[in-house]
Length: 564
Ligand SMILES: [Zn+2]
Image 1 (cartoon, rainbow, N blue to C red):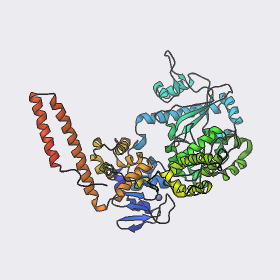
Image 2 (image 1 turned 60 degrees about the vertical axis):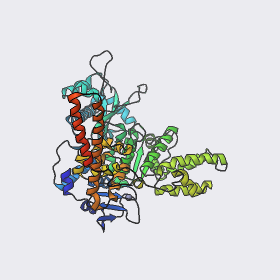
Image 3 (image 1 turned 180 degrees about the vertical axis):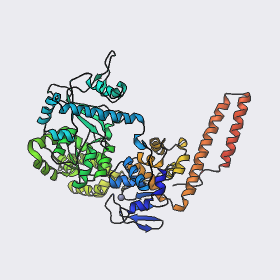
Image 4 (image 1 turned 30 degrees about the vertical axis):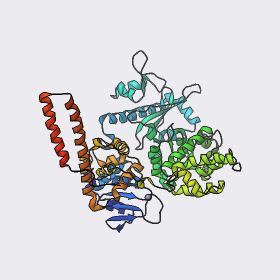
C-alpha cells in the first residue's frame, strides 16, 4: 500500500476529477461532496491528504476514490493498485484468511444447492408459493432464490460431500446443535430461501421464508457470524449501486422482500437494511451512493417510527431524506403487487421532506395556538432536528419553526447549540486540547511515523477511543478507513492546519513527549517493584532506574511545542 501511495500523487488523482487551483503550497477546488460557492476543498501535496473545511470530507487517495466513485475500500485499493501497476498480495485487505474464504465458498455452495432444488421437481410447491408472491422464474434466476427441502440432514450431507465440516456449518447457523448431543440438524427446512449478498455480491447469509400459513417463524434468518454483520448489510447493494447512478436517488425499504419486489417492478435503486434499525454505517453506505434518499417504510405505526429513527441516523451523516407515505397496512411489496408500478411511482414523486412531514404530523397532536402544547411541539421538533447541528439545512428549518411559533431564530439556535455557544461549529473546527490528537493525526499521514507511533502511552480519552479502533493495522491507509467520517475529518483537519515546513519537527516533538512518558511510566513501575525486594535484585532494578532517569533528563523538558 505504501508503494501505491508512493506512485500515485493525490494532486494528480484528484485533478482527474476536479479542476484544482494552486493556493500557496496547497491546491483548492469547489468541494465535490457538498454545494458551495467559495472553494474550501483543499489538497496538500506534502501531506498527501485532502480536506474540506466546509463539510469535513477528508482523507487520503483511497478515501477520495471511495467517495468519488462510491466504492468500498478493497475496490479502491484494487483500482489504485492497477493504476500504479502494483500487485496486491491475494487476501490482503478485509478478506484475509483461509477461514473467511472457505465460508464464502460454503455459502455459495449452499445457495447453489437450494437453487437447484427449487427449480427441480421437488421444488414445485415452493415455486407455486413464490409465484403467488409475484416471484416468477425470472425473479428466481435474478435473485438466485432457492428451496430448503423438508429434511433434517440433507443439506449437511450435501455440504459434507463438498468438503465442509459440521463445525463450519454450525458457525454460520446453517446447522443447530441437538439437545443431548448427536449429529447437528439442518435449521432451514421447507422454506423459500433468499441468499443475502454483501456489497460485493457474495452470499454471506440466508433469509428463509415460511411456505405454510401455520409455519413459525414466518421469516428465519441466518444469525450473525464472521462474514455477516446485519448492521453493515444493505440488500442488494451491488445491484442497486448501478441503478442509483441512473435514477439519481436511493429508495430505502425495510425488508428484503420489499427490495426484491421493487426491483421486479423497475425500481432497481431499492435497497433494504436487514431486519434491524438502520445503523450509521449503513446510512453512510447509502449516502455514498447518493445524497438523495427516499424512505419507503411500512404504512403503520411501527413503520412510521422506524422511518423517523432512520431519518435521524441520516441527519448524523448530514442528509435529510424524503419520506413516502404508504397507505396504512401496506408495505412496498404489497402495494406494488396490488396497485402496480404507476401507483407506487406517483407516491414516490410525492415524497415529502421528512422534517416538514414530522412537523405537520406533530401539529395534529399539539395545537400551536395553545401555549403549553406549542412548547411540547417545539421541544419535540428541536429534539428531532438536533442531530443536524452544523448543517446548512438546519438554518432553513429553524426559519420555518420560528415562523410557526413566533420564537426568534436566535432563541432557537441557542436551544439547539446550547447556551453560550450559539453558533454552528463543525466537528473539524472544534478545538481539541491535547498534543495526543496531533500525534495520532500526524502518524496517520506517514507510514514511517505510523510504524513508530507509541499508542500505549495515550491518556486522552478521545484519542484513546480513536486508537482503539485503528491499533493493530499495519498501514495508516487502512487505519484511516477504519474511522468514522467525522473522526477522520477531525484528525486530517488537524494535520491540514499545520504549516508544511513545521510538520517534521512537530511529529518529532510529539514523539519525544511520548517516549518520555513511556520512560516515566517504567520508572514508576521500577520504583514500586524495588520496594518489595532486596540484595542483588534490588541493585539490578536500581541500576535500571538510574539509567531511565538519565534518559528522561536527556529527553529534555516536555512542551517544546505547545498546542492550543
Ligand atoms: Zn465539502
